[in-house]
Image (cartoon, rainbow over all chains, first blue to last red; front, side):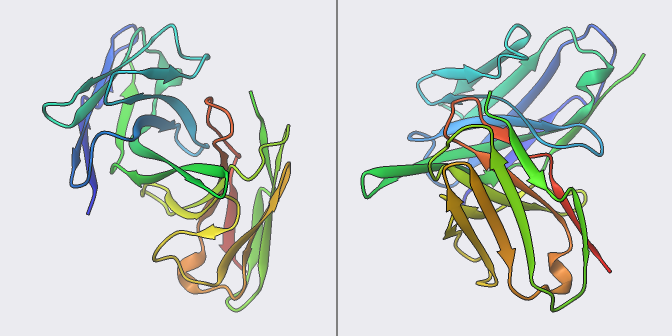
Length: 124
Length: 107
């Protein structure tokens, strides 16, 4: 059974850097993209970016200038850093596995395993 | 960006009701459409992938349909545990995007 366990600082001041890590237990670490997704209180879901085991990344253009996602394959972990945070970055942050499948000449991709979420609050 | 628009934003229904939620993409996404259920304080849970494929372990009262730009999630007979918020999400584009959510409440 695949499990994602995440951790990191929950309270930041404006201009600081958010740092979260997600560890993957069970299953393969390679062959997937590993994503970060956030959800402001009472609002919807926003995809932040993703990384694979080789270190190839994709980022949401709206956050790209402030985001770095890295991977440590020796520990089956990946991490998120978001710089220069403001109150607008207050949210629950989730890590998730992005799985791609191919069939009948077509394909699909989806988030099938999620971490438990970490509330990050930015306040002076 | 591919914009995903859900309707309605909220919905009141009773146990046993048949419920349909709609998701529209701003451009064709083939069948790269997924549905998630989220309960308060919990991570989203995958229900349907590839527009109509039921994720393992998800009750068969959930079904999905559609392709291109218009998609639906149907719950055939609402159960008490189904009251939650539902999100659609497209993976056609590398910039993954979600709908704004549909909150399903008890009438």
